[in-house]
Structure formats: structure tokens, C-alpha cells
Amino acid sequence: MKIPLLAFNDKGIYCQQADVYLDPWRPVKNAIITHGHADHSRWGHQNYITHHTNIPIIRHRLGEINVTGKEWGETFVINNVKFSLHPAGHIIGSSQIRVEHKGEVWVFTGDYKTENDWISTPYETVKCHTFITECTFGLPAFNWAPQAEVITDINNWWAENKAEGKTSILFGYSLGKAQRLLKYLDTDIGKIYTHGAIENMTNVLRPMVDFPSTTLITRETKKEELLGNIVLAPPSAHGSIWIRKMTPFVTGAASGWMAFRGARRRRAIDRGFVLSDHCDWYSLLDSIKATGAEKVICTHGYTDIFSKYLRELGYDARTEKTQYEGEAAEMEKDEKEVVFEKNETPDVSKNKEL
Image (cartoon, one colour):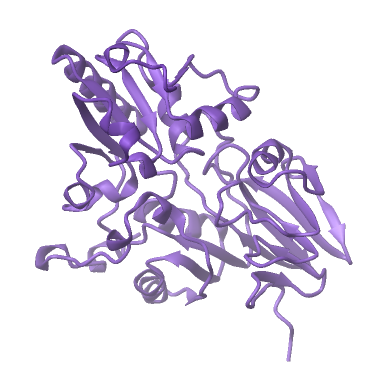
């Protein structure tokens, strides 16, 4: 029986012909890494290969590792298997991995989004025979508004809070989401303060992107200094002693999960902004169509619903289990399994023209 070019095992996505893993979740000898988020970039591998802009990110997180950087589209050959990295548009340094052997081409997306955020290198369509795609937001309920509209809403919210003499606290994942928010906050409204986790990661990325200036919150920071200004913090800070000292404040969260009714309430957030670093339903479908792939493998997210719909469209689609989490790190545990209200049950039939 023919050995598939990429196979899923208990360590990750494996290319047996090259003896290389893609984003493995257990320690291996050779790993090609798509991006720096913890579920895709783990400690313990002997050799790492990634895009060169991702190197400072994973070294910041993992320490001194043996890592080699590659350029976009640069072909590197391992045991007669050709590999190359292509922009995924997810966060800074995020890649898709193209794998070619004996005329057969597979693409592993890692995490990706197709809307240009003007920070990360924009997503690039890569033609292939088999496409391994995430489907974190693989339901028709997820349909993102343009980034510019969301950013305008965030800045207006901040200005309203300032007018009421309150501090605005905006939650976003410390790598990727926080920098996307930071880039477009209107400093004419006030100062931008940061939690240490976000400040440290942003400093790693400042050589690559021109971000507004920020002020790190320390023990010496007085809550009076924060009034009318905005604080960027990771979701883990919500409800902590650190944040309770900032009263009076208003909280907001930027996440794709804010599209669900009840998500903001369950997390006790005052205002939710639907802003994701992943594809929505329509971008997923458009991306798959553009690759020309006949076979699609769906990993983390709404895999069963999404793969079933792809099969209805005529694709040879199936699912595979991984340890990737998508934006799950931004959710509370009880939000990971969404229970749909009667009128929220996904109806994909109207999307078949896509």
C-alpha cells in the first residue's frame, strides 16, 4: 500500500520519506514549525526549521534551541522531499508548509487567515493536491466584518469610556492579537498601558513592526494614571488581583468567539469585539477552492460539520485529530463546547453555491 506523503500519528504530522514532523506536539528529531503559538511550537525537538521572522518569537518562548530560518518560497530538500514555507497571514512569521515528492503536493496551513492585517505577511494561495486545513471557525455563523470596522468600534468604545472617567481594559492573546490591536489603537485618545506578558512579546516584535509606544504597568503604577487610558492584557488576567486594583474600569475582549451570543456573558466581559486571526466560514471555503485540491483534511475546530459540508460539495474530505487548539487559549473551558440555541443550529445548505 502506498505510504501517504503526510500521516498523522501520536507525535504529530509525519513525513516518513523525509523523517520530518510538521508542528509536532511531542519531542522529535526534526520539526518544521508553522508559527509561534504554544500549540504549534513546542519545546523539546532536536532541530527546528521555521520562517526567519518566527525565530525570535520561538526563542523568546522556548529558550536557546537549534533552529534554522528560511525565506518565503525557498525550497529546501530533505531525503528527496521538497519543502517550502509560504505566508499564512495568521500572525507575524506564520507559515504554510508545502511538501512535494514525486509530483505529489500537499500543503499544511497551520493556522491562517486571508484578510490582510497589514502586520503579518499576507496569506498566499498555494496550489496542491491535498490541503490540510484548520477549521477553528468552520460554521456559517462565523462571518467576519472588515478589520477597519472593528478597529473603529474599539477606538470609539475607548473614547466613550474616557469621557466617563473610566479605564478601558482590552483582552487579547499576548502573541498576535495584542499586537494587531496595538497597531491600530488611536493614541490621540490617550496612553496605551500593557500587561507584562504583552509588553515582553511586543518588544520581541518591535524590530519588525512600527508599533505605538506603550507603558508597562508595574507595582508603582497608580490607578489614577490609568483613568481614561487603555490597558492591553491577556485573557488570563481577567478577574485577577492585578486587574481589580484598576477600578473604575470597563472590560472588552477581541476574539472570534465574541460572535456567539452568550460568550461575552459567560466570560463576564462588558463589550465583545469580533476580531479573529483565523479564517471565517467563507474564507475557509474560498481558500480551499483556490488551491485546486481534491483532497482536504480538516484538523482543529468544527471538523465534523465542516468536512461533511465539503463532501457535499464534492471534495474527498476527512478529519484528523491533533493537539492544536486554534483560539481555544482565549476561551474559558466551558466555552470550548458551544451549545447552540434552537435558532443557532448551523444551516449550511444555503451556502452550497460557494
